[in-house]
Length: 222
Image 1 (cartoon, rainbow, N blue to C red):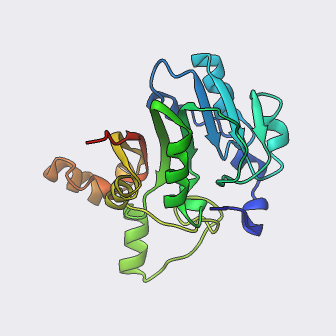
Image 2 (image 1 turned 90 degrees about the vertical axis):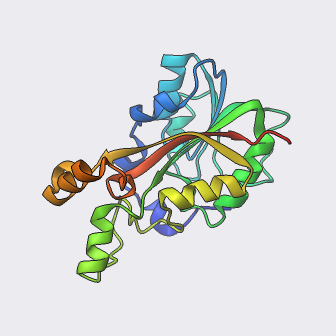
């Protein structure tokens, strides 16, 4: 379930230094221990420590792990895989901020993550939305699917998801999504989308957002 590849290692430093403040609200209040997968330079983990007083461990395959090690409680310079030696440590929350799409096997990653969660632990994730209007428009009208340096069609993405397939990803790996919401709306940049949103009461929300953020918990045993 590695996301290590040459393009990923060539990313600009800015890519790794974003704190992702908008994801803080998806981490339940009362969380004490956190594993930040793909923690980059530790900016989001540092935010959790400052705002929530959490103990934060990180996993990062690039040299950004060196920076993260200065601000987080413990950092593994590695990819997320089942052979990681985390001892008996369990986490109240495991973070995948724009990480699952970089993995060859996100299903395996989420299945492994269940073993690392406390009884009431959760997964917090941000995942790009392939059904975003900007991508759909270029594909249908212009016949284009051009990889980019960042964004939905980032050239380091190995997997692509829509809101529906995000639900399937988590359900198939044993989770219930507790909350999910779109982020980075593209509605204001398009007169057509503003009209569509108005007349359909935003029923086509999968077209409106660059990514979806969510919190999920393990399914209750029946």
